[in-house]
Image 1 (cartoon, rainbow, N blue to C red):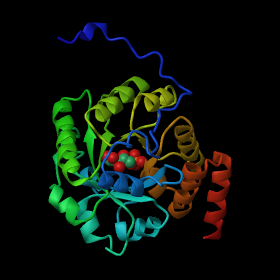
Image 2 (image 1 turned 180 degrees about the vertical axis):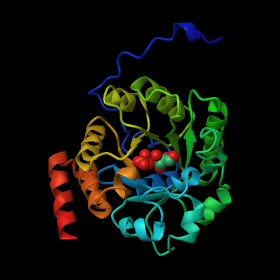
Image 3 (image 1 turned 120 degrees about the horizontal axis):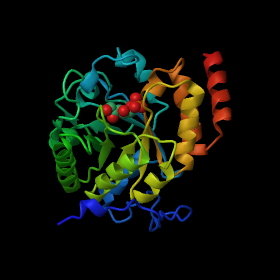
Image 4 (image 1 turned 180 degrees about the horizontal axis):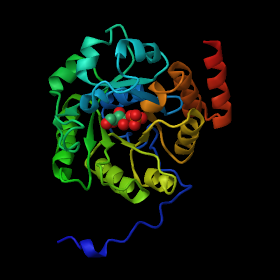
Length: 293
Ligand code: 5RP
């Protein structure tokens, strides 16, 4: 029986000693099959090992939020600057032209809305349909600590098991319910659980204190969500700190599509993620692109 009353917080995370990638650019992915490695290599740039994912799947539970009222007008102009597009199958089929060849990470959970319990999700895409649409990965939320913890973890397990059969990776998205702490202890727990059940990569939020420990303890890549809209320079600073502390990229939505100039913002974020330019330089680039538009 588990001794839950004697769990000691991790202490030595080997910061400064990166995990051995065993000869493959993507952390923890060296021992996968060809199809999985190929799809992961389309998500993570094989040169930098990093990715700028543009997340615009928010409508699946919150409807036409600011910046996503019209995906054709708001998002399509950004697509060429993203490494990966993250969206639902409904938006993919109805709005994204099949001539857009960016890798797709498909939101594969749903069944909830902002009007009820956010955490109560189910798998919302059949693997055959995901394959039919040529996706590079499927994504679902893991709500550790919520009333629906078990159900959300089971959703991820089901996606991983079916995805493994066809070489399609799973992105586990650490969701935070209304009453959950957003700290290193919580995200460390959730990201590690996701990796332990076999998620190929994991999305977390950035936290000021202890983000490097979250990344070190997660044996597969972490990408960060942007979270609530911040002033552009602050969002760029957050991206820089996350990459500097071990994230392998961003899966950013609101801080890009709600920016004053989303096209400029996604390019500035890309400079940080792939070239590690300092936030001030990226912000200058943002300003130049915005003024030139
Ligand atoms: C919604 C998601 C979003 O894709 C994620 O939150 C990223 O968007 P943002 O940067 O706006 O937080 O998983 O549940």
